[in-house]
Length: 167
Image (cartoon, rainbow, N blue to C red; front, side, top):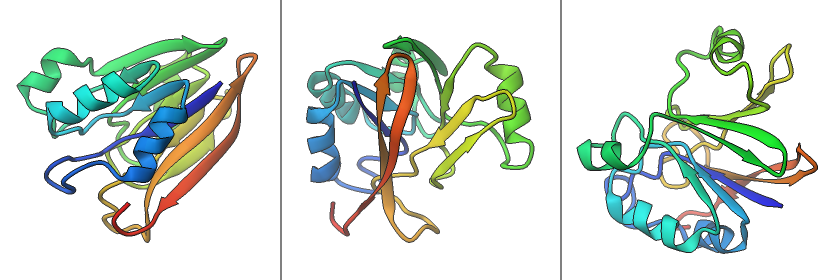
């Protein structure tokens, strides 16, 4: 099963539209995860229409219409993998401990907010993934997103993708 992980798309404030490369990944993915900060409903509608399955949350930059449609925290089981999604996890220091406490049943936690790619495993074995942002690199050298595979409840082949300027 092919998984696409993205967050912090910020359309139309940081980009007029989603990058072509990201949309191509949406079309190839069996499962799409978005960890918030959509900014507009048009982007949500686009991904919801194109994705085979979408699990998504709202972020701190998402107004009342998006908050009415999306939860703060989402959980899903995908091919035996227990996945949790949230926009914010707080400061990097202490993140692993906080997330283990908050999501004790999850195998993988996807989060966003910082626009900084992150891939670590906690002492308990919780995998923490932040895909960065495909539209707003901030202090990072690249705009980014993640892909991965899921097989028999195991996350495999996590890959950070760098986007060329202009997507």
